[in-house]
Length: 207
Image (cartoon, rainbow, N blue to C red; front, top):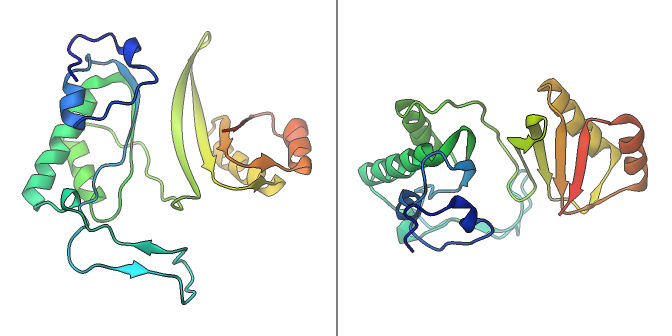
């Protein structure tokens, strides 16, 4: 797909299956508000590891296996070049007020941090999150009053209780930001009452 000189609005709500570097080359400069990237971690090396949870060990979580794929196995020089190329394109297409969020592990995040510094991309914060359970990020949302900044918490939990809301409310308060709480679960009755009565700085949304 060629996107040279494409009006960015025509691409809204569109899934494009394409090499990310080639795809971004067709996007206009400074046209994107937010980029969320989950690049290869380059960890498909060494032995094939897996865990079937037959023995319960604290911190191991559920069943998992190490990814062993050719696309995730690059020489260091190749991985460095690949990372330089896609991050440089992200920098070009992001608006000056835009944000970039990148998922990574200890296998690759150090390399990416160095590239951010070389390309003069400011690292505002790093978060350690529980995979498949929750993650945090900051967003700026355009409004009639200007760009509103929110601390966003995404939770994968069936029932949200008072403690969940209070914990994240306090974290948002520590950042001096309102909280946008996104979840796939339902809010408990007491938690809803607590939200309406005491937590005016929270926007709660179920997806």
